[in-house]
Length: 156
Image (cartoon, rainbow, N blue to C red; front, side, top):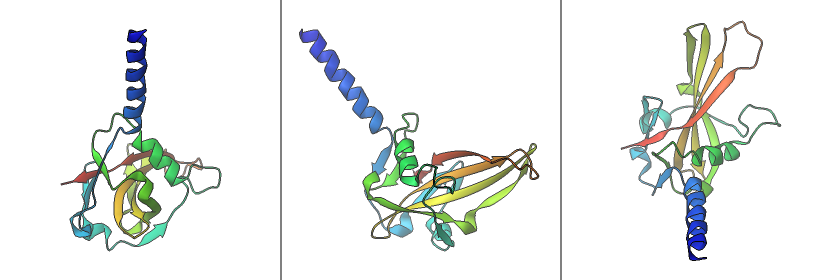
């Protein structure tokens, strides 16, 4: 009986740890918040001057996931052991595409577009950043682009 109780406790703990797979930090002054997105360093001076377009859904249609749901999914990724958010996930209330940082171009028969989405809380503090890579087989393809979405890590 005692052994089974211990097993249940460990099982419950492992479920809890999966939910808290990535790390968060306390907020710091805005001008010191920098992010590393797929090898690209994005500094406060870059993203603070970029044109912002608010976005609510991942693929732009009403049937897709909301960015809030996507963030919850990314936060549970146990393979990501980086600090990714300032403050708790529950504080994030808005998502903005950084238009001036969006880049793209052809590569190996594919056309890639890199978008960076800044996560903001109710009092307009930067909480984190998401990188979305949209890939299309070629520029003439009529099919919907594939996408890869990942959390950027906080850069010290």
